[in-house]
Length: 85
Image 1 (cartoon, rainbow, N blue to C red):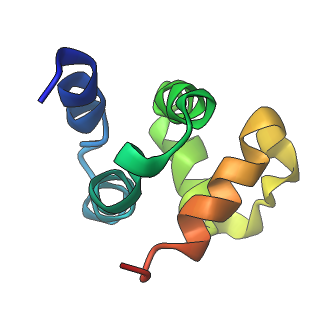
Image 2 (cartoon, one colour):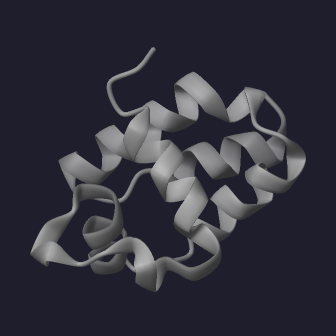
Image 3 (cartoon, rainbow, N blue to C red):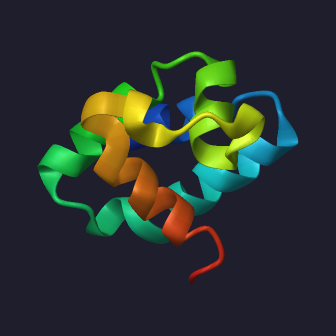
């Protein structure tokens, strides 16, 4: 495993079970097949605060992804693939 990939996997661990499941699950199943630009965007997404990620990825507090800006399409991909192998 290369260093950047390993660091990205580590950053998927957020400390809450729900976010860990969503982020690590997406990472393990889909990260390697993402185009380079989406890999970069995913790493940038991991820089967001946990409450923001929870709102976007777990649909908490009825917050819409319209506030997600450049992450909107990636968030849609992550949430659509939560249960998809």
